Image (cartoon, rainbow, N blue to C red; front, side, top):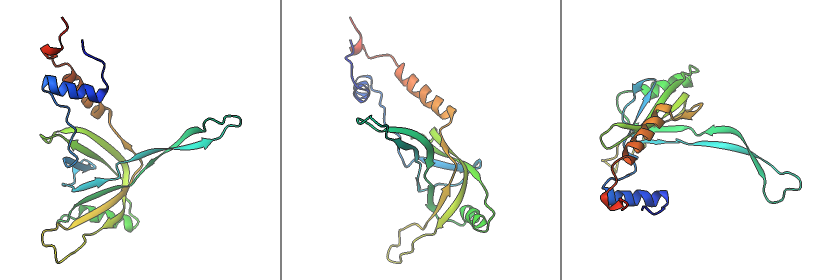
Length: 186
């Protein structure tokens, strides 16, 4: 009989006895597409963050807790960083916005597995650039890549139903492997 274990302990036992590993995905393995076009290899993405803000209400006579009611979602700006090249797509997008011609674009941040296949992704909607940062130059470091950054504000991040379904299918397929003989009950 299998003893009752917490989820992390169960994964550790599964790894040890079945030979299957539940390794986390690597943060360096990702791609970004904006309006259906892969926009190149980025060195870093930050700001993939959502917060549900709350409003506190102190009810008279209730001294043991304070009510917290959800109010709105707050999305942090996305900051995309990549090596500067001759392709000025991000600069042109920012330049247009700075001249009052804001172009709203949708995009996707895709996390890849070790075989470079998408394992999950996050969609962002109605994004536009609000800040561009050029590279920092340093004549004493001849191996540093020139990095440009663009900061995007947007109206939301979501994880598609397809991404969630694929994750469920992968975990279900892993969970339905035959149990090792050591776990068989007499």
